[in-house]
Image (cartoon, rainbow, N blue to C red; front, side):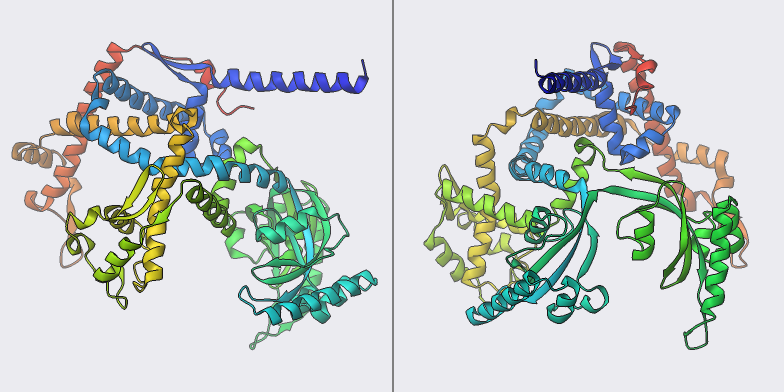
Length: 582
């Protein structure tokens, strides 16, 4: 067998083994609750929601993990009890669940159809960082044909100069309309995917290092000629400390004794390079009061968060290295690198990238394109009579905020059909409900164009729900898990409200007894500023709240103790010790 083919087979086997081991780890039983189980994977997922990041989770002590686990066991006990007693069939809960599904299904569908793919593409790009320069030719998005022709002609002349061998920076100084060009000669420094507009980003990542775009790249900012000057694996963040030797300035802010300041910084740098304790040098010499109390620690810093000279050194030097003196607008810095964080796996980075992507114009454009495609597929159309009806009800110089929509329209009016699509309709009541949530139109004049836009916006959710139903997303494991989580939350809320808080009763005798035992806790200051004891009447609200909390805890403990007797709990502490271990 070809040795390369054999290597490929072995690699696949190794990857399958790694995947299987991680799946097996996640599926290990951490807790037995009667005949139910909490897996290690479930625990890790829930714990991450609480602590926010994998790094935080890894740094938590075993006692902190046990504390959370016990709270989660209590939650699961309540859920188990509620489900076995059929509380999920309660009409109010079912109504809430159905409403949640209507609101959640479109979001889930869009994440599945659009966002997941884009996140994976962004993740692959974000493994690298790029450094690029550009020459900008201004061209507004709504430019006239003549202005567009002139802009493209200018861009073509720039490209011709580059083809002739002229220096990119010099050509940028001559032609670029970027306001920063005089200071950076077109250099945009290092960045990664998701930090600029998609058209620019796509063009940069398609270039080879040293190459430039042979055609102008159109973005919302104008026309760009782009040169890729570097591309390399990305470091997500670095952990650094620094010592700042500040510039000495006169009364009007001019720098004085720059040679003396630099020499002092150089002396400190040599001491650090010579092996002196960096923390000790910080305390002796650093003039940055903010970081000095942390021994100079600036924490985990991402790219482009520091002055460029410091940033450049921090992301170039090795862990444990010292760099300096480095000039910044504040003075001279001596920097030591204590660690760095590489890009995590897709699983670890997914939510962060997703949240960032959904804030971008690129997401809005993709979403709009997706919705328009569905409207075409489902033969969506606005009913002209509906537009005419609303125009007759609204004054075009007024806005939505000027009206009380619920009282403006009769129940019969609210059934007016404003738009239709295959298998569904958009009624006035749907528009009113949409406007109660979406405030984008609150201050817009009610012209025919605005009314049409409102109806189109109101149609998005029902059309996405239709697509979700056609796609059978209710059978997706992730969708089912999300709905189950929501149901569980409702069930626990109902248990807490109806069966625990309802048992909490505080009477006057309770208040008096508690006050007499704890009166020293309730004080105020008199007119002279001295602390004096509050009376019972003055303390009643505070005491009542404290007593309610205490009685709730007692009620909850009795309830949970009964459930633990009914559903024996076994915690596998050896499995807990594996939590968040690679």
